[in-house]
Length: 234
Image (cartoon, rainbow, N blue to C red; front, side, top):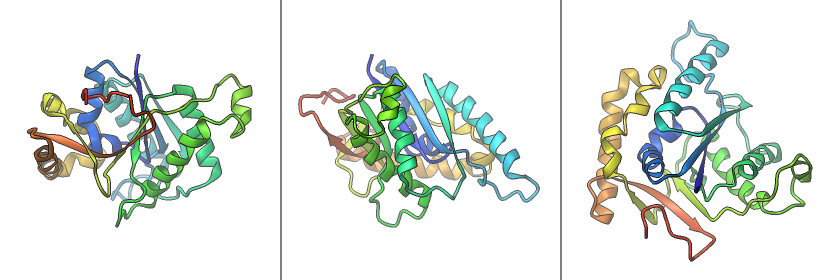
């Protein structure tokens, strides 16, 4: 079975950026995994909530979203929202999960996007790209191999919210279900869902024009195997 690993900074990142892709890959038989590097413990304007309370809310919301997405697995790292910085420790933890899943496709933020204002997003994207390299070489984090994991060479990277897209995935067939998973993230989106839906739909239609589809999601695709066939058959 083909596998895809999504690496995000917060609960809801993947659902917002490429939820149609999640559903499309699932429909094509992919086993889907999600690694979330923070627990989203600061994502609120409500001054009555504590960090711990916010964390519990967002973890609960993610469990429901993951169920709707049909994920095999989702896992939180222990980093704090807004305090995630690039480090070899972060690279090592992402490396562990790449080796654990050994995905055919690794999907994360484009860390080189101009004017990407959230430092957590930049850090996760860059650390994931470096983890792709370390995951395939046995002298990086060798303790992981002693714990029973093996090296993994990723065939594809798809960077969402790209600075410069070179790949558009037709998600028209799953568009009607695109927003169900977002509805699970009530603490973040309930009050602005109409605006979110309008914006995401507008962007998807723009991307769809690139490939003659009603709705598409854009990526920067990096391939390490020219003979590999992509999820849409191209």
